[in-house]
Length: 295
Length: 219
Image (cartoon, rainbow over all chains, first blue to last red; front, side):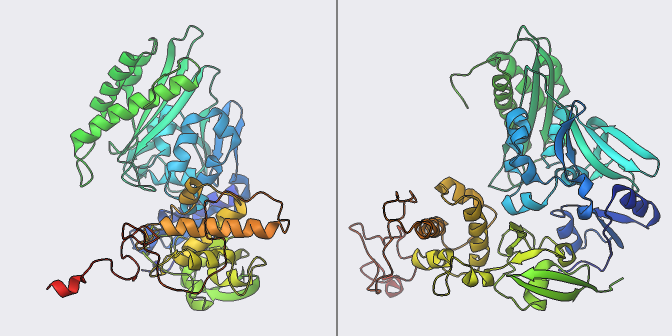
C-alpha cells in the first residue's frame, strides 16, 4: 500500500514548526514515523499535510538540566538505549529502551513520538507516570507543561492541541536513595507488551519508602497509574510481603482485556508478578535491599 | 498535492538525483527509481526487516521511511557489499559467510540480514552469539531457524579479524567457527552417527534423506 498524497513540510526550527501547525489545515507531525508511516500506508491516517520535524536539530538532545532528565523530541529510542547517563542513573529507562521494538526501529523511532502516539501498549508513558514526568508542548501561545497523569486521555488520544508540538518529555532527576525499574511481558522479541510495569521507589535515610510511582502498560485504555499500590507502599519499609501486597493492589487496579494472547485474569496476575519484580529491582538499585534470590 | 521533489542520495558511494513524490517510500525509490532490487519488500508492515538498508551507517527499515527524508544521506544496500574494501573476489566476508555456512535457504531475508550484520560488525568486530542475535532481532527468517545466520556472521567476524592482522602470531578471535579452511570441493553432506546432517537438522536443506525409504514411497 502507498500513502495518499500529502504536502510535506520540513521546518528547521520549533518556531517554524509551530507556525506551520497553526496555519495549515489538519496537519500531522512526523517524527520517527515508525508508527505513523504504516498508518499512512494503510490509510488509517489521511492527512493532507505532514510536518516532518526531523530537520529541527535543536530537538535532538537527551540530558539533565534544571533538576530534570530532558528527552528532546528527536531523541531516538536507541539514544536512550546507548546513553551512559541513562545506564548510570535511570534504571527504568535503561530497562525499557532495549525492549522497544527492534534495533532498526529503535534507530529511527523517537521517545516523544511514542508518547504522542499514546498507544496504551507503548512503554514510555508508564515511565512518565511512574516518575511523575511531564510533557512539554509548544503552541502559538507559548509553552505548556502537561503532567503525565493529565496527558493520556484515551487510546491514541492526548491532551495535546492540534497546533501544539511536543518539544520534550522530562522526569525529575532521582535523589540519592532512589531506584527504578521496568518489567515487560511480551510474546516474542520486538513485540508490544502483553503487560508492563514501571516503578520508582524513593527512600528516606532510614530506608522507609518516601514516595512510590507505578505506571502500567497494556492493561488499561491508556498507560495507567497504580495509585492504590503506591499509597500502600509509602511510609513502609521494603519487604517481600509488602511488595506482594503492592503487586496484588496493582493487579486489582488494572483493567486488561482478554485477547488471543491471554485472558484478563492471566494478565492481571502478570501485573502482580511484574510489579513485585520491578519493586525488587528498584529497591535494590536504590541501595536499600540486597536480594539473595532473583526472579 | 502530489508534486514531485528532487532529492539527492549517495547510494553505495554513487551520487544519485531522483524525482520523487513525498509519499514515495525509500524502499520503492531504491528498488524502482534506482533499479536496485537487492533490497526486498517482505511484509509491507515494518515487521520483517527484509528491506533493511544502512542510512548514514545506521540500519533502518526502508519501508518505514519516505525517500524525501533520506535527501542528502548516504544509503548502503546489499549491492554495495561486493565493492566494499573488505570484499574479496566480489564477495564481502558476510556474503561469503552466508555462502559457506548455509545462512540462507530461500534467500528472501538475506539482504536485510547482511545489512544488519554489517552494521553490527562495524560497531562491534567481535560480537558474542547473544549480541549477534540481538542485532538481527529485527530481521525475520522463515527458513533457517537462525542458527546458520548466526554462524555466517561469526564467520565474517573471524574473516574480517584475520584480514586485520596478517601477523599469524595474533590470537584467534573466539567466534566458535570451525570452518576457517577455504571451501573444499563439494562431496556430499556430512551425516553423523545419529543420522543428522552437520547442520543439526535432519533433511532440512535438500540433502539425502536419512530415512530408509522415502516418505513418498509409503503412500
